[in-house]
Length: 275
Image (cartoon, rainbow, N blue to C red; front, top):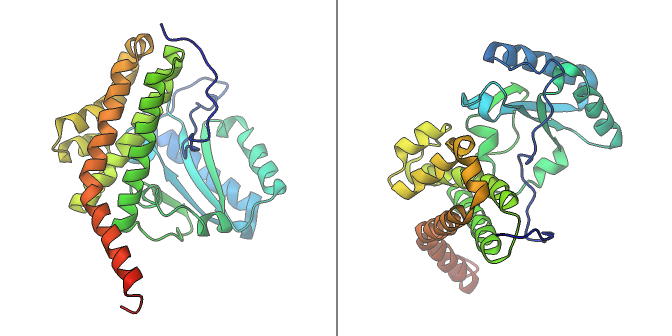
């Protein structure tokens, strides 16, 4: 049996997508696509009135944007403001406290945040996302940034797979953490397909069609079938951890030649700074 231990560690990176579900509205009603579109229009209008000229752009991303939502899925948006202070946070808190917006999951960025945004994870602003207001100021990711993103995710999935396998934790907590690592692994596989083919598969169905490696397809299927297998994973998460380890090593092997070439190029530039 796995025991329960404290798990604070500096290796834990913040997720772009929070690992919690927002509360359903008071009616507890499931959402439909038409209702979501109506709600998004209402949300954009509210943001315009709330922030005025401070509002730069809004995009809709996540499962509702890509067509993979279930009726209980949250509605994900990203909002960029010119600047953010406590006043702006209080305003957003007030908006999200309204019953009609309680299914909204909002990522808030300032222009300064975006200008210093890590050079990976840009795909979420361009592929499978729907602009609702304004224009995204970030360029699409480069090949080098795709390699960086795959490497970062592979390292993170590998780290947690090894750590959670070798250190005793409550099994259900391990399973919950690995669910989010596999969600990130799916993102890495989408980036891998784009890196190899030029196409970013916005849905998991399309991703599986474009993947050649059966083990990579299994990673996607773990996420797809999570609810069905959740109880099994919470009793014994060890098979998940080994799959996470193998995924990490597999991705790193796939991108290692490109990383090696980039290191050679960097070394050559250091030796010949004028070239």
